Image (cartoon, rainbow, N blue to C red; front, side):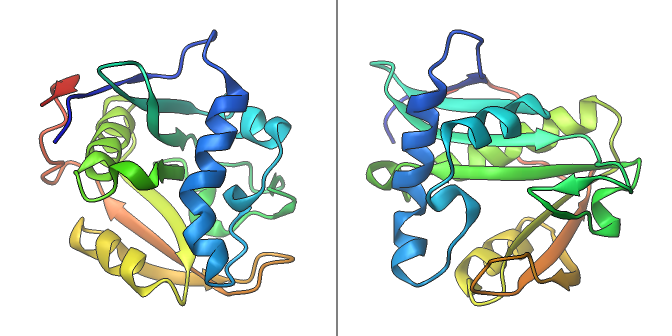
Length: 187
């Protein structure tokens, strides 16, 4: 694998470049007919999502942005999540929310996604969260299996407004083996 550095998103990082990465990373899902938010979200939506929590980026040795993930605190029960009512599992005080996991197609299969998830889960644990929750499309079986292998369990489902698919809600208890996210740089 190419040397990858993981770090928190910096204030001088380009939100436009991050949005372009999300679009490129989610294009294969769009081609399957799944209109994930990150398929075509605006720069403003990307900005709002990363500002809601802690975003991390994956960079090559040459500084190319090749991955990202955002982990955020729970939502308010009376609030909205991307315009929809918030599912109960996203409002629990002990649960962080993982979103915008993306790896550029040129870097898939190299473990970048796993490193990003390790980092997001470790951050959530360090902040005192006992769980991490996420959602993904019901028909995205490969993604669901990937999350299950990491210890995420199905806890419900939701139909987000305007989506062409129903989503599963998944949650993982932290404090279990989180992988080895202690290193900032991997080779």
